[in-house]
Image (cartoon, rainbow, N blue to C red; front, side, top):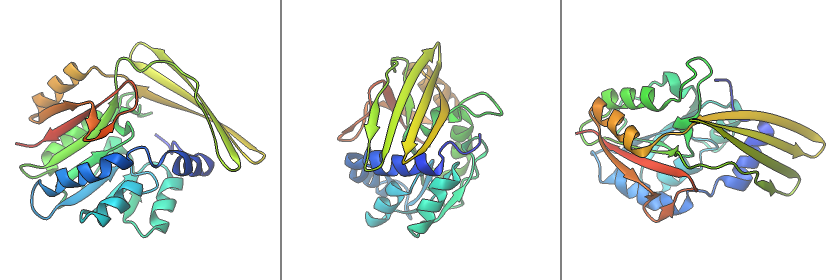
Length: 230
């Protein structure tokens, strides 16, 4: 995959959507702190670094990776340890005890493999994490339905059109910032919770299917997984 977010789209996402998981932050931090000692977070698809920054405030130090240079630049400007990288070929830092993949990151289709990145990340994480290590991810479910939401900000507008064909969900994202117009296509896999649980447990994980991150409900048509390494 190339970067999925242009500078304009990264800014719009940061301004309009970076509070999506606000209510989940305390719960996620508590889960990580109750895991293996010397908690260290690796956030895959960290975006502008909002969750990483909050996690540090809660006592969970960590680092992140994002595919889009525009997001990496924003996160690094905040003083966060963030690098550019592809989840399909992830290298998990030594000492990591917990991994988060918020915002349906592992549902995105990789341009080279034509598959989502859930299983490559799950296998790499299982090998890298200690006993009791955790992985949290929310995914596109089978009932995510087409829609065309709009959102506006101080000087920007965005329209998203979603179409579904079997297990493939396609988002056409149109943005306008001042006199600049842009269109980008994102594609994601739809997965069923039961079959997802089976393939993850075959790797060796203990898998729980969640409909929320603690008090924070997920967006419609999504489900989450909590993976624990025995």
